[in-house]
Length: 286
Image (tube, rainbow, N blue to C red; front, side, top):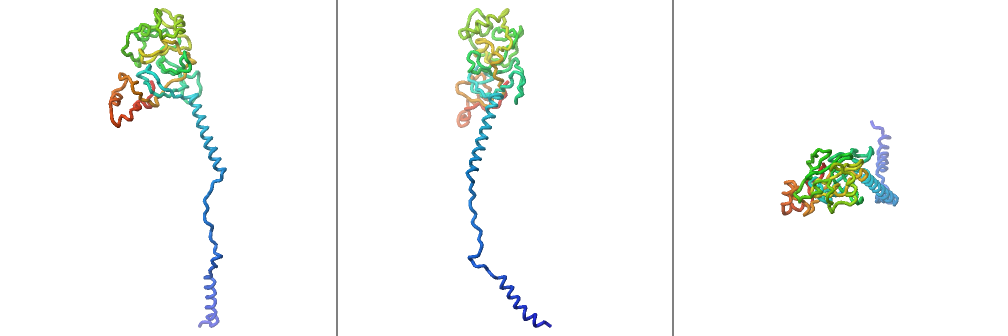
């Protein structure tokens, strides 16, 4: 049996529970979250970002200045005196530490200057000008040239890099040193000094001085015409051609590789890329 008291009370309790559970708040009392507002950066953040960018730029400039001053410097070849090793329009990276006096502890290795090495140096007559030649004579060497060939201490020098273009005979250029007649291109101070350094037809190279020649032997104004390169005037050693600009009219066809000659003869759209010698880019200098 069901207890009447219980059965009569149950519906009432149930209805109260349902009524309470279905109560809804008035619309005015409904809590609605505020709309999302766009995030705005305070002015301080803009200044901090700008300051950080300026600091980064300063760091880059400082590093670039350090590298150019002490390590590596770019140079461009303006003349054909070093053809075919270096061509007009070649852009070089020069290791300024390679020929530094003593061990600088720099980023690139330091080496002693040796015969056959290509160097960049301040032109002794006009130090603001940079020249690039190859070291042929070392301090203490007895040097002479006969018919264009170099003799060091009485022995002929092997020079696979030297180029002898057809040219008219030149008694001073090809048979050096020669005091019988002066070439108009010879620096007068060098002409006077050279006379004091000749012994038995050979030029004696003083200490801390180097005798340099261009690889394009018959078309190079070098130590024959203006004298020695002092050790202190040497800037560094070229080690890489990082770009080579093709300048029309400056390429001697006799020094270009067959693929370079084929490139020059191309026409049409492919010739558009001939403003540069792409085959020389990133070429190691030797």
